[in-house]
Length: 133
Image (cartoon, rainbow, N blue to C red; front, side, top):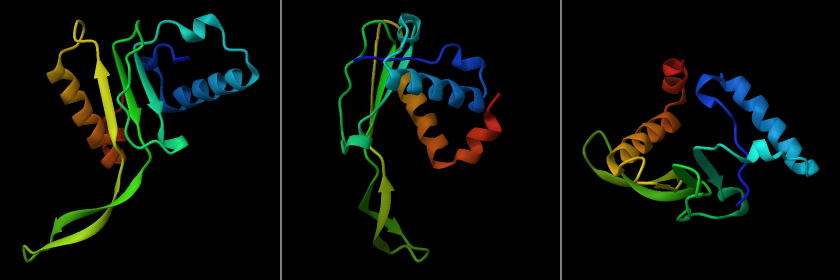
């Protein structure tokens, strides 16, 4: 697995992160990824949805703390209660994600809280924007 990474992401704005991702993508397409672009990562997000993958159990990169795999967004049937309390089947956009972490560094409860917050941000991006530094 070749994993280019954004350095010092915690101190970058969304626009700076987007620009760095674009630079890394361009370097990769040109075959010009530098060794420094491939080292020092902490968390990897792998998108298998863009190739049709739906569920994956990602294998942790040896030098990193966490990896997440994102599947293809699918429209699936789900139960929802109406105002009258009746359950009806509705179509919902569902994204399956799976995370794996190095338990020598981060415990499962911390990972679960992280994934819960990540899910909330995906469901309510305005909240994410408001809470950004």
